Amino acid sequence: MNSSDNNYDIVISGAGSIGLISALLLAQHNLNIALIDPKPLDAITKVDDTRNIALMQSSLNLLKHLGIFDEFYKLSRPLEKLHIVDATDRLLRAPEVEFTAQELGIDYFALNVPMGAILKTLAAQLPKYKNITCLFGTQITAIKHQAATLDLTLADDTDIGSKLLIGADGRNSFARQSAGIQTTTKKYPQVALGFAFKHSRDLGNKSVEFHRKNGPFTLIPMQNIKGGSQTSLVWSETAEKADQIKNLPKDELAELIEKITQGIVGKVTEIGYIAAFPLTNINCETYAKTRTILVGEAAHILPPIGAQGMNLGFQDAAIAAELVIDAYNMNADIGSDDIMQKYNQQRKLDIHARGKATDMLNVSLMSNLLPMQMARGLGLFALQKSANLRTNIMKKALSPLGVTPKSML
Image 1 (cartoon, one colour):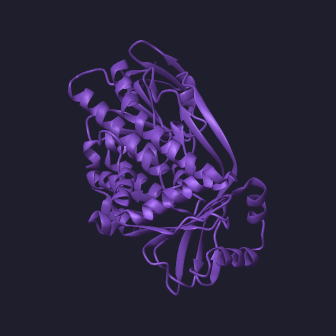
Image 2: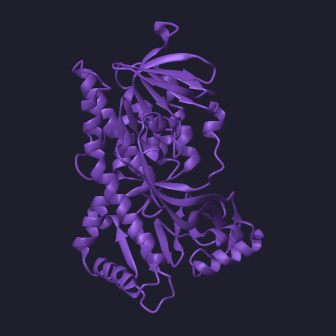
Image 3: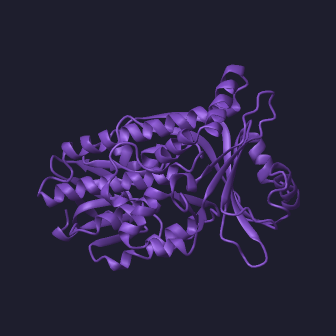
């Protein structure tokens, strides 16, 4: 190490939304934190992704805990209903199902927030915390695992030390690789297209999910604009079809959206930048090992069904922070094997269950097997008929399975 100034309690690799929320949670206490990202700050907060993200109640409680909920609320649109439509055009079609926040006794079960606004709002909090050192425009290139610390080398040959590394560095996580954590990957023959578009007919505070044979086509209403409405769309298709859609002239794409949505959005008037994401289901053998905790897409990637991905990452950050802060307050080793085991135990059930659920639904949409189609149809029929079943499903979707961290209550 060059000097004691280069020693930190915690290093967070990755300043995306989950890395930022991790830093803000941990900075509430007297922990010395380094936040590292290869991009400069203006590039971190400038995103081409025009999608909205539905932040569920547990994630909103986390924002309230940090005192920044109001800043998100004014940029968002409440989600009061989720309507599912079977648009597979198969012989056995499932009934339409609607989930409403009113059935849970709450005003809304999520806020739809633009992706760019999430990053900008979180990043704007960083200057408030003197115990966060931002090392942007560089990255970790080597990690040596010592008994009581980690020695990290950055791209500019700076050496820093840390008791704990939080890997928030995405699907190709260097933190995960350096810790020797193995992954299992399931690739789907689909690509998700994500973009926003403007249109003439307002959806209200309701998200509509069309279940099509190549995957879901999900409309997420955004804040209205002067003279019209705007909606975020996540659209799963085969890789070949997705490439064709992305390259369609905008007027033809607008007509296609109007046709698929069966007129509920009216006239599509403007289409934003289209991002494409190959669909995968990635999971880890463990979520923490050798003084390294994985959060967000470094730990798991799910198909874009039911708005699980970002919310699962918020849960990772909240649980990791609570375990670390409790250990710190007891003068215990924040990077100990005990902390690693506790984090893994608390995340395993939640991540595995949501991964399997989204996988099953995605596979059932693509399957031509009659038993699979019958099972999906019967499941949606049961949800349509039973308010108790709907509320149980909603409760499980809105909060972590197992122990809920105090910051999310």
